[in-house]
Amino acid sequence: MTGSDDALRALPSVDRLATAVARAELAERRTALLDGGVPADEETLVEAARRRLRPALRRVLNATGVIVHTNLGRAPLGAPARAAVAEAAAGYSNLELDLGSGRRGSRHDHVAGLLCELTGAEAAIAVNNCAAATLLAVAAIAGPGREVVVSRGQLVEIGGSFRIPEVIAQAGARLVEVGTTNRTRLQDYRQAIGEDTAAILRVHPSNFRTVGFVEEVGIAELCGLGVRVIDDVGAGVLAEDLPALAGEPPVRGSVRAGAAAVAFSADKLLGGPQAGLLVGRADAIERCARHPLARAVRIDKLSLAALEATLRLYRDPELARRELPVLAMLDAPPEVLEGRARRLADAVGGQVVDAVARAGGGALPLLELRGPAVVLDPGPVGADALAAALRGGDPPLVGRIQEGRVVLDPRTLDDDELDAAIAVVRAVR
Image (cartoon, rainbow, N blue to C red):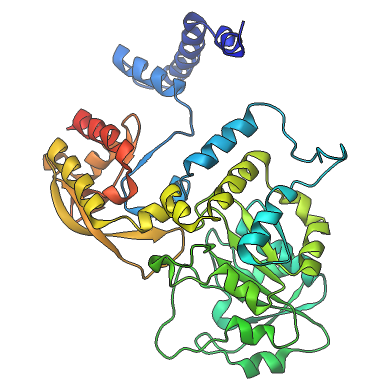
């Protein structure tokens, strides 16, 4: 008997599964009736039972045109990363075992070498997200009672009330603000540095831009001040040759400049799983790895497997651009997008129009990715009702509403997803 036979035999029978779902649904309906609710017909009860059978976390078809969509799980993984996750989940792994010596190893070793190779850093570790990476770096490099110097123009709120002043406070350090909201000069930093200064924190304003009468100090100049620099570059750009990413600071640039620690995300423009990466000088990264917070924010084995597979693709930039969905969407040829749009429109009776897609994920807020999209006329039901019906499809199809119509953007639907999207639209119209 094979392992697959065992797995099939372990599945519950249809009768047992149906009975369990029916009991739960009927119990809920009974309670509702006792509380004065309205009786439900058989069709309603069957649909409610179907909903109970569906997993809460489901695959969604993203037709919003927002590539790194935070509400939809940010970066979709490439095929090598998906395969690596399946392999790691299939059984045990050498997560923290050195197979050569038979002794305990470090989970960071699986990606540290790759990160150093790709960024030029001396050392690297991975944690569970970029917010954790920044918090860990400030806590380990500055520590309780020491000062961290930050430009007033970089005291940002990244998202979900994650604010830089609060990060510094949680790390136990003291915030020293320099400059103004729109202009901070090198001399401002020089004047703020004293005996209690542990680090300068530079934070890339990923999700907004300040334009006009502005001035800021570059990373190379900051690193020349003789104080450790922690550089939170945000979205994580390793594909420096991709024109669409020119507005984001490359990780390698900060490492070359001499930053003690560079923090960035793996699940945004890098195109990998949720993770926060820290690369930089060996002494600074070692302090981060030894800090008690490092265990609290450590990365899990499935994310680590996906991260390693994603990073391996970057050894060949052309391969990365083909295999990583985020990079492929950013660099999609116009003729490919036009072909998808025409195919979708012809199949569902939509209209092809010019539209603008976005990078998303709090990155490149000014970037406009122009291309075709398909507009659906909602008719008398209205755009909100049509969009809700599409979200209720199997799989759910998520578009955007614009000027009273539903817009489906093919940039964020790959060729293999078009048939599923077409089927959802046909089912609800």
